[in-house]
Image (cartoon, rainbow, N blue to C red; front, top):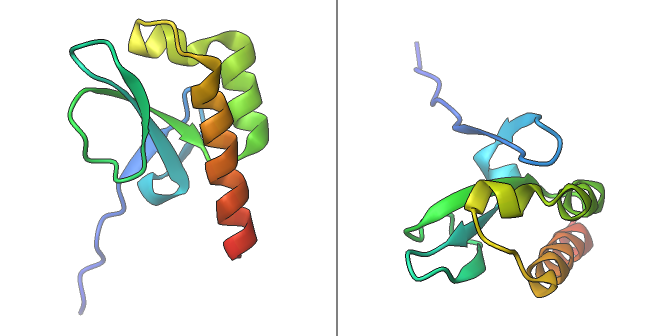
Length: 93
């Protein structure tokens, strides 16, 4: 009997839904206060996960959930980059 590998789940800060980590995008704030999109999911710093959907990203921006989670003002460029990442993924499918 093969053991099933446990799939790490993460909670979307915008929707509150649990999804496999691979279906999420991580946004990180470093100790220096820099905020960036972490596509590897391994960078050090405080991370928050958002679902790979434009709706979730728009909701996160509207409610400022990333600002609250990362305890810093998240620049609009980060949301633009998140949307670009989502659109790129959709083109691959």
